[in-house]
Image (tube, rainbow, N blue to C red; front, side):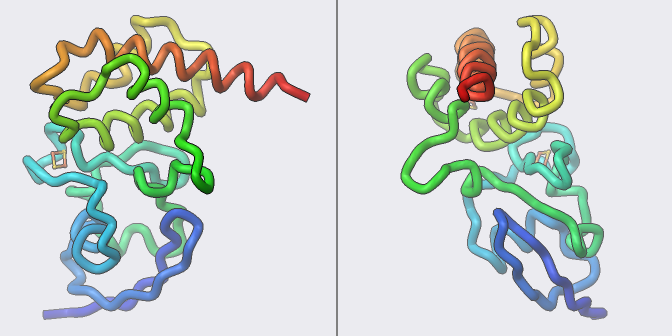
Length: 162
Ligand code: FES
Ligand code: FES
């Protein structure tokens, strides 16, 4: 089995790992770096639970090779918290009761994070479209959209503060 040695930057920390060349980013995050907040399910880029942000874009980590992330910036759900403070998206999901079983939530929040970074003042329809690739079996999506809209307002207000 061919191994590759990779330098990955995950949540601002550099890691050197040696992994089989065919291993996915999801494999490395969960099995090598023990970042199990990123969930696993379909392994076919169909459900969205494994979504992380790579160089500012949301990606399905189950179908991205770890080797494709050499030298790139990866952010997972564990990297959103700022010290002891939850990210506004995480706060809004809690406040709006947008979490039920929770399995889809890390992927949902990372999808929303990348989306809001590029679209700070979205419409509800745009939010619905942005999260369409992340499946939730529990919530009916309404509260998730409410939470993302609330987080977008909070992030804009934070950005406007002197
Ligand atoms: S586990 Fe990656 S999209 Fe479903
Ligand atoms: S909260 Fe259960 S799958 Fe989304």
